[in-house]
Image (cartoon, rainbow, N blue to C red; front, side, top):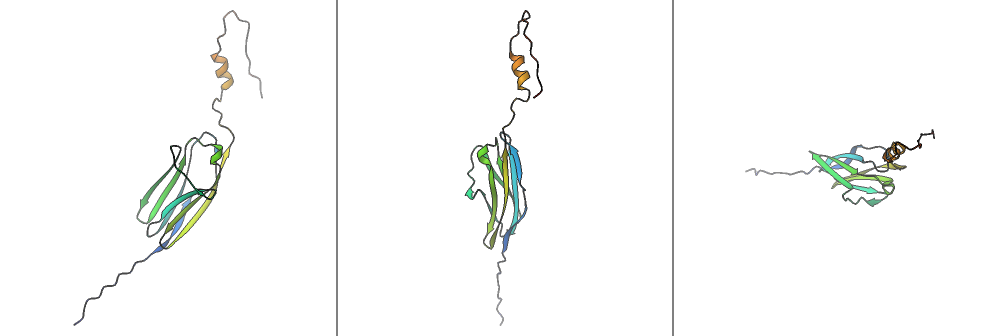
Length: 141
């Protein structure tokens, strides 16, 4: 007499950022990696922005993600940082139940000193004749 009734309930939990990079400084020419980790039911998708615009990936700027269960770890890597990479970066995690966002500042500093001992390198590359009376000396800055 009784019929079997089945009820399916879909439970959703809004996306939540649970861990992320803090404000970061990097020198021009170096590489930097920043991350955010989010979770939710259903698994969130992650979008990166810089100064309010989507981050565009290329050979220098990459985004990688790994998911375990309801958690997503997203990493934004910038190789050979340029002054134009300076800005406020945001990680936005979202799913059907909601979204969460975190932001942090990437500060790009000065120029990379590609030749730490450039004075010595220049001087060593010069040909100095054994008959020359020339000499060189490094003076303090």
